[in-house]
Amino acid sequence: MRKLYKTLIAAAAVPLTAAITAVGASPAEASQYSVNPCVEDGPTKKDDKLAEKLNGKLNADMAGQFDGYRVTCADAVIDAVQDRGLGKHAATIAIATTIVETHLQNINIEVDHDSLGLFQQRAHWGSDSARLDPEQATDAFLDEMMRVYPGESWKDPLMGNVSQGVQRSAYPDRYQPMTGDAAAIVNELW
Picture 1: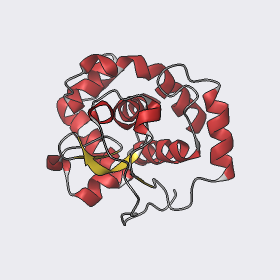
Picture 2: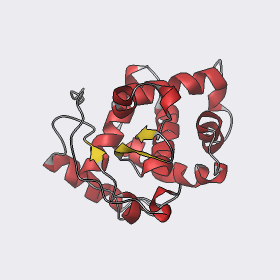
Picture 3: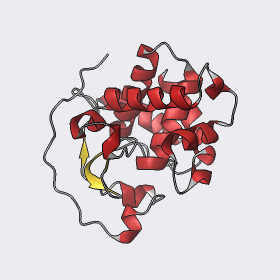
Picture 4: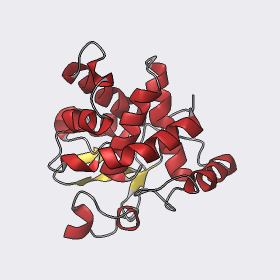
């Protein structure tokens, strides 16, 4: 597994507008956030090639928007799911959630109140550094998923409903449409 960055990278943030801070900003708008890397040694040329391949398979928000950076972020989430011994179904739920929340970016500035990271987790999810660490953020997401859906009951509902059960978004209908792209990403990177 790739080593995860543990320190924040200072980056110039683009001024935020109401359109960008609103949940559901377009990928082009969302890409203007200040972000942390998801892995220490990426993106690589291999990541860029995987992104090109995936762009031909994606149909929703990420269609034509996938790049090597997002591959590294997806890889980090999938690695954390695999480290917990969970399968592709759990990874697909997690990736669908990050597509909706950040278009697979590790956002390092507080957006929508105090939200940070790939999952746009609020302060009660953990420290800033924990929410910006893809492995810890994914673990926190999975812990909550298993608390809300005990005994693997998270495998039964629609994936988008599981994402909503964990995230408690004001926009519950946004997760399910991203599960097809999430499955394509997971299947390619697993």
